[in-house]
Image 1 (cartoon, protein in one colour):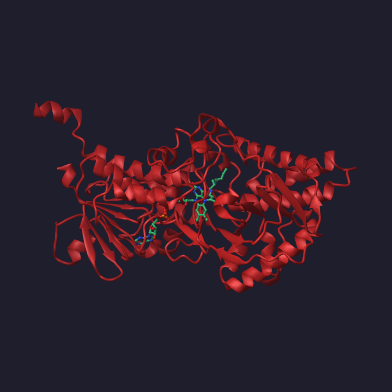
Image 2 (image 1 turned 45 degrees about the vertical axis):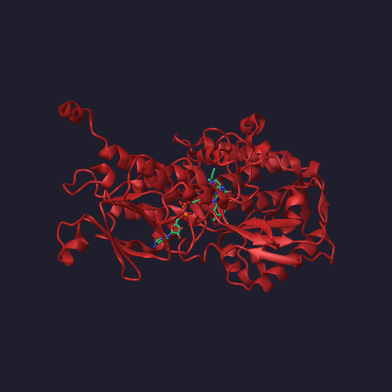
Length: 502
Ligand code: 6YU
């Protein structure tokens, strides 16, 4: 019967944990999560800087309101501040970037007036919104978000600010905002993000909030609801044999449809396996992860969908050099007004890709910590440098932009998601030429419908398989639940059978 079905889950991130949680609630009792590393949580990962909590992975609940399952769980486990749970906070509809108290610093060490910068921010946000409107229409005038944003921003600048002495600075600010957007989308350049599909991503109402005790608390609470020993750690999966391939070759014919083989040689047999490994891992290992290999259309979609890098550089200071109200510090390179993707030397210029620093708040909890955001190939290059080199370069950067040669962060922690062998980047995006069909292809279970083989042998979850919430924690959780539900309905007696039994 269904409850005895042997279900294996590959990956103990929130998607895998979510799937297990749902199945167990429905009475399934034969579930195992196989995890490559020694910890749960995957890209939900909380670290420490001088004893203070810093998020190595996911930062915010994007859209904390009732439709967000991560918000609902966090409320249920009492992990949030009162303020985040208030009706008021839940009903804020930011629909884009939240309105933060910003400081603007330029490469010549000047603090720029907010009033001078504000029109450019407004234009940029309006254009971003326009990009989303091309979804489900055949009107997208260009192929990528980057092309559209740059063309339109420069056109507006020429039309409206021609006589304005702030024109070049505002254009340079567009360059900064484009870099920030690369981080939000998880891509090297916005030229790689598909314009017609950009609006497929949906934001939920609510002003983004953080977990005062760390995002990983959510994982701990979810795991506490699962039977002990359900997770097997330090077992990287090497190959998922389905359609009984493995059983046939090892002469145990007919025992079960799926065998999961780990790198250490251990094997686990199952009726179903839910794969939740990141798209970055899939891109690298698709040719060996499944046997028989993935069908062509699934492979194509894995190649086509995007998976990029966004990293953080946390800096701790003895004393703040920013105002008390400041929430974000933007860096504007005055020579970047033409919005060309700078073809420059990675070694000397990688730091240019760092778009801004967010201020960790409240100060009573964090002390004086800034989080620098850097995406793309420059971010991947940063990962290859030693901590001292990163600290040196970031310190120089801050001294230049503040015009204050005494500024010196005392400690640094940076993330290295591209070099994580079980992730290979940060999160997915809809790359140029991709559509929702690619995400559907990715999520489609094996064997394909129409085959005579045992159905639903290999199912696919994880952040990248969610059509409207890809790249988020709630998207990953919902995808895990979706695949659990697929199995639950598979085993539910159909109304016909029920009648027959009566
Ligand atoms: C969010 C946020 N956030 C910052 C950074 C990162 C991410 N996200 P997992 O990887 O968790 O689990 C898979 C497991 O599988 C893992 O444990 C592996 O070890 C294991 N595994 C792999 N290979 C294996 C093998 N062979 N055998 C066995 N096990 C294996 N999301 O909601 N708020 O603030 C951020 C951020 C630096 C890296 C984020 C954020 C993304 C989430 O962290 C991520 O989606 C989920 O945790 C993934 O869970 P999972 O279970 O699927 O995989 C318009 C438009 C544009 C669209 N984008 C806008 C949205 C903005 C996205 N924002 C992100 C921003 C930040 C800052």
